Amino acid sequence: MGWSGISKCRLFFPLVLILLAPAMSGINMSLASENNMVVAHRGASGYLPEHTLAAKALAHGMGADYIEQDVVLSKDGIPVVLHDIYLGTVTDVEERFPDRKRENGRYYAIDFTLAEIKTLRVHERTKRGSDEVVFPNRFPLGKSSYRVPTLAEEIELIQGLNRTTGRNVGIFPEIKDPEFHQENGFDLSKIVIDLTASYGYDTKEQLMILQSFDWAETQRIRNDLGYKGQLVQLLAENGWGISPNTDFDMLKTKEGLIEVAKIADGIGPWINQLVTGIDSEGKPQLSNLAADAKSAGLTIIPYTARADALPKWADSFDMLLNTLFVTVGVDGIFTDFPDKAVANLKSSR
Ligand code: CA
Image (tube, rainbow, N blue to C red):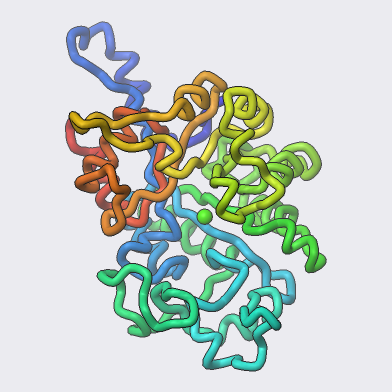
């Protein structure tokens, strides 16, 4: 399998290079770097509040190849773009609907109609139960005015910008907590697959990649729901409490990755699952994950490259990106700073 339908604009150039190759012998060509994808993680979330249409428009303008949507449902079953099944930490739900929290103190998107969700103001992400922002140098808390977009509104924004700019930027929806949605009476994956198909995303040639942490759901998406597009299995750590029924230790093994490759086109690992650190000479130390995934035929798109929250082993954002793109050889990255990743890829190596 591969990314046959992905990034046509970037693929065209390497094809020209291949055709010209005999005339250009002696020139060191790196075709791999031409295929690298920049995925705007929650939009250009390093610059504007995550998952707002403003952050998505900026990501499009910055040259991202794909723009990510995390998808959850409202009470009336409408897919909205929100990182968590909760409305706290990125909206003013606590002030507007103080009585609507569940016993555990949390405000669930699925307890609010779309009309109610649309009354909320979105702000820069804060730590739970406080006004302290997660990333201190990002967009000022509570300034300007943003709303939670529906998935349809976001697709219409990206398709509209594709038309007006002549670019072809893809969508990258994530099915958030499918088990929770099932418990609340909704088949989130089916709703997302049907909605995206209605916007023309129904084959591997379309610029859509669907992603999920839940391995049982990834298999159901392919085997039971008949999804024919690109599909990525996300990889977490078992201790994180994400998709507790998924054994990520198993999926990360050589055998596990071979099973993943029967269903999905790629994996979305955590950066630190690929790079474990640097040695005393500053050389990146890699796990076996990338090599095993490649030999299974899987593409690799790790999360999340943040210029303002580097892994311990990276001394700059470009060092992080060079390690991922060149040393590990990933196919793309999720990043909060799509402009910096685009610039890194454009710079000569
Ligand atoms: Ca996500």
